[in-house]
Length: 388
Ligand SMILES: Cc1cc2nc3c(=O)[nH]c(=O)nc-3n(C[C@H](O)[C@H](O)[C@H](O)COP(=O)(O)OP(=O)(O)OC[C@H]3O[C@@H](n4cnc5c(N)ncnc54)[C@H](O)[C@@H]3O)c2cc1C
Image (cartoon, rainbow, N blue to C red; front, side):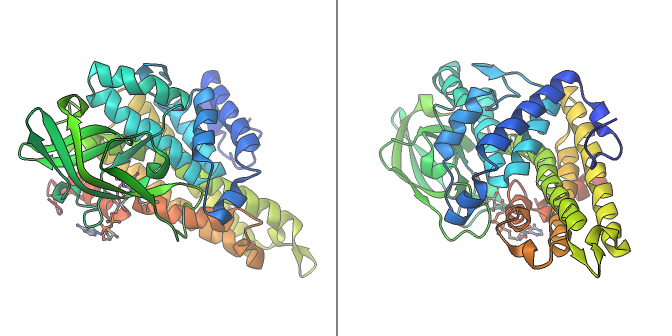
């Protein structure tokens, strides 16, 4: 039987000893290196991204589901469990790891040349180099195919012009995977952030994901050799396949934020008394707690199922959309409901709930909004694309 009171269905039994061990290591690192400080980072709107990247690199978390080049080669389920534990700490911290491993490293690992892999992946796996992934633009978000960033040939070189917006890790990154339009279609480029004409500016005044570095990238005639182009990436399918990787991590990660909210609310309801008894003793509170626990466990079953499909090499993008749509939507609902259980204390930064609720608004939007995932699922159901 599981020792976790929130694991009503003993879902822990679905995991191998190795999966549990990886999960426990990540949980411990989050307990030691994230949980005591994250409320302060959030309030300051600044997280020690480079330092955290080194910490996570030291335990093999960065690109852990990739093989070779210093990557751990873990299962998709183990990677998912790591995302869950990281996001129980903070969605911004999980975003750092997702962008590094599932977007920047995956793009180079899947579409890069041998030289690009050798140059970047080992350093990114240890956390010595930080990566970001630039697809979204100020005027092109859900519809990246209409991007205006351009790459044109100039002799043997490429020259990149344009800009990217809302790019996680950009203000601190050493390397940016940048997607740009060419006459032959969308192409990806591995851009060292020291390249002349490349600049990144931190986006401030965020009310969500404040313990994460988010930036705007300006590409002002950035000249790159052809060796900087990802040779295997042709068309929009390439960046979209990277997004599928990152979305998979979110399927698990959102459950971590929800679990943290629910366990906080459960503890609070057990100790806070009104009308002469603990809040947890009221039927209405128990109905809330029961409904949230049911959704959390259902979401977990979904995540494990998708993880096992991924490990079998059978996971389809629309299946990831089902997981992202459901688990983020339910996680937000859980965070909001938990907030009510804490009453006024629910809005206080002394408790993690409001921070998670605010973070989940970003998680709902990035890696495909809920509406886009509904459209992906709608297309799978009907055979008709409502957004092409
Ligand atoms: C904190 C944060 C970090 C991010 N990190 C990254 C990153 O690292 N790299 C990166 O490339 N991007 C990143 N993003 C950007 C993110 O992926 C985009 O915000 C997202 O794709 C949505 O684009 P948009 O904000 O332009 O919204 P829009 O595309 O303008 O959409 C606005 C609204 O319209 C809806 N909508 C759009 N099209 C349709 C349609 N056809 N039918 C119905 N409704 C529709 C959307 O669902 C949404 O509700 C990040 C965003 C945030 C908030």
